[in-house]
Picture 1 (cartoon, rainbow, N blue to C red):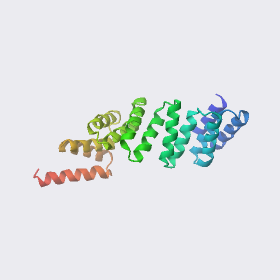
Picture 2 (cartoon, rainbow, N blue to C red):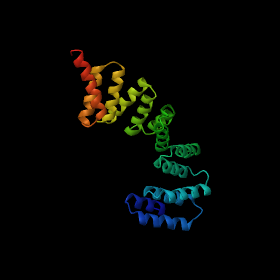
Picture 3 (tube, rainbow, N blue to C red):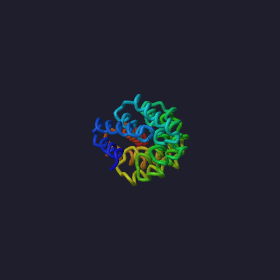
Picture 4 (cartoon, rainbow, N blue to C red):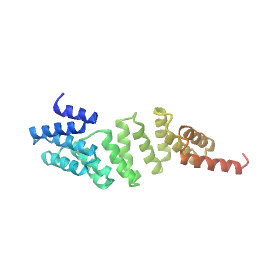
Length: 222
């Protein structure tokens, strides 16, 4: 295990001061290597020292303009600050350089999602779910971007896929219930809303939707 690997392991063990000292030693030993700056930036971002983290990422980029993980780190930093425009720029740059990981596509998609630009989010969230097909969070958000873009027929199998991987996903049940309403399948919708409430009794959206269905049925004499 080299020093970078040792320092990363210390981070995982939440021994941040020891990790910081080791990263500092790595940088002092080879100040022209961007990897040390990137890893130190990751540590600083992890402990919410965003100002210093940004300086370390930018120093790494000065040393290597093709340091994709430095751009990814900056993207994360701006994402945490909810500066989605700057986050997009950096995630896109990381992908352009060649970073091909689910997280960068997911976070890029979510920058658009948080700005309600759902159609723009779709291709990135789709790519993230392709790279990690068993990740229910990526799949669910991909389904949400489709649903919010009114691609209801495309969203349905995605939410169903989420349930195949995680049968107790209350929000997937809720959204399938909403889709069932669009399809005028009140009974199917009610089943999904009931299931969502079994999993998460405080699911207010599912409760409200169920109440509306029951009101319709009561008024129709069912």
